[in-house]
Image 1 (tube, helix red, strand yellow):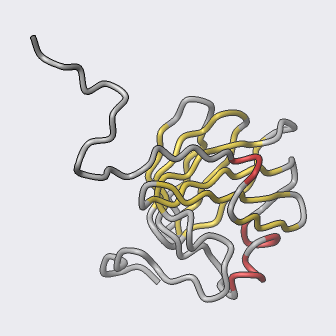
Image 2 (cartoon, rainbow, N blue to C red; image 1 turned 180 degrees about the vertical axis):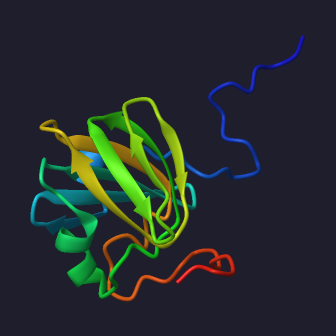
Length: 144
């Protein structure tokens, strides 16, 4: 009969299970009309953006970052609200609840409508709203 090893620690140590909450973030970046909360877990940096109606990146975050447009590459998911994104080359889209998005460096963004905008950021979170943020991926030729 085999003995059960359940509950016994194996000879090889494993990493512990880690649980974090965005309402108790590792880092919180506050600015007029918004906040960005960041947790670091499993080698990733995950952020939650919360913006009030009237928020605009170039007005409320740009001065903190020291750039005229956002130079951070983003991959994320919109939880609620709507936001427009306008690339430096003029391409413009509106993101809404349920949208999974990729936005390259070189863009402005603003809340659309009267509802707060909330999104999760799976890439680019660590550099967001920081002084001198650099593109995480080189820009394509022809971009300003």
